[in-house]
Amino acid sequence: MLVSLNIDAILQEPTIHRRRQKLNAVIDGLGLESAYAETLGRIKAQGGAKARLGMAALMWISHSKRRLKATELCHALAVEIGSPNLNTEDVSSIGTLLACCQGLVAIHRVTSTVRLIHFTLHEHLRAHPELFGTAHSTMAETCLSYLNSQQVKALSTIPSLDSQDTPFLQYSSVYWGMHAKRNLSNCAKLLALKLFEDYKNHISIKILLEAQKEASWVVDFDKLSQFTGLHCASLFGIIEIVAILIEMEGYDINKKDCVDNTPLLWAAHNGHKCVVAFLLGRGDVAPDGPGKDGQTPLWRAASNGHEGVVKILLKRGQVTPDKADNWGLTPFWCAVLNEREGVVRILLERGYINPDKPDSDGRGPLWYAAWYGYEGVAKVLLERDEVNPDRPDNDGQTPLRCAAWRGHEGVVKILLECGGVDPDKTDNDGRTPLRCAALHGHEGVVKILLEQGKADPDRLDNGGLTPLFCAAWSGHEGVVKMLLERSRVNTDKSDNDGQMAPGFAGMA
Image 1 (cartoon, rainbow, N blue to C red):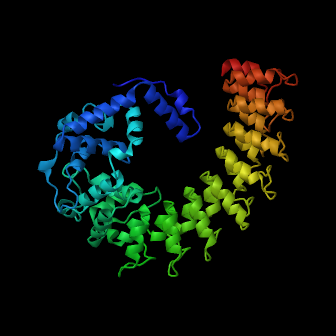
Image 2 (image 1 turned 90 degrees about the vertical axis):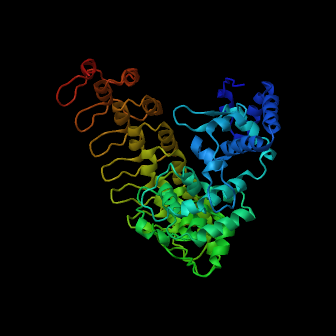
Image 3 (image 1 turned 45 degrees about the vertical axis):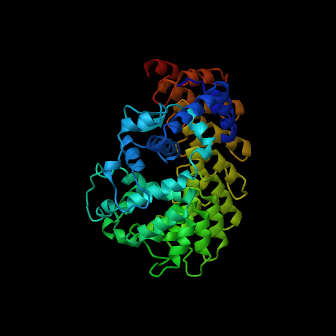
């Protein structure tokens, strides 16, 4: 049944909907639709435990948040929802599992992960959600039952974990909330509340926080008890559970956990609009309360590009749009540096931001957008009259010079088209954008600058080097040819040490 398809045309479709339409047409054209349906019919016809095992395996493989290892899948399928104990005797072998799936599942030889035999099968299963019913709620219930088991609870105070004894623990800890957020059943809700009743120092907290941890975060594992069920539900964005926990005695809505995050910070960090709006609707929440390194909820949302959360926070009073963290970075700067174009636009529309304010090195937001090649951010910034498109930093480096140096053709075009940019402006060392692009062999940028007609291809820097000399020295033949085609280029011009560019090309 495994077929080989040329998917280039499918991948070139502009939207997921169009790609899926074309892919389903391919499936129908190859007769795979009927072949898959026939095989699924054989799985169900096995009856009893075999049919249940085969269909459950396909559900997990097609709906899991990451690829499952064979041992993880086998243990997941052995979980009895709501049972206080894990029965390892109910764990089927991978051979039995594969047999029950009638050839639709395979094992990756290197990673030992389970996968469907072909990507078209995944699309077929997605097109028939009735095959698995409420898949995500069942998966959430399974994960929570695993975490609530006596075997897992006994691991709460163990510093080192033998993952071979509980192979499904990592997946359950990190992903139960994602499945619950997709489809929260009453059973999953009760199981989650049961987990939080005895949540203090639960081993799943450590696993979850290690998966969530940012580079700058330091998790104090001696204070895991500070991470409560409210923090966890806010992290996953499960509004129904957040609402229940807030009304329960003992939950502090502004309490910081072992990474200095409040529930609001977790919700803002992960972009959960409903939870953010719910928390802000209460009068006892601190909407601008900082966490790690002085990062506010708005800072976190802006840094991660969560536009909806940014809008909700800005509508609330007591939120400072330009509040910096301990390192001097504001939400606006975070949005610029992380290429969050939509957030940049939202913050600028508020009118409290100076879009051309430089840092201590004299580098404004546009300078960094040019340096990193963020075309969308550059366009948004250039729409503002306050932004000087030709502002140099303390070293005389303009945004155009930075974009040329880095080879960002799109940004170079945007800057040249906006007006007010000198294409031949030098930095403090006399280096022009053309000289920088030539040195690094950025043919596209060199071509744009030469065609623009205002960049001098024979201009000397402070060391007496021309763009031609730099290109020849670095061995960039394509750039050398383009420069030689320009009649004004003096091929005999030497640098301050008397070295000739063409001669140096042969020595590079």
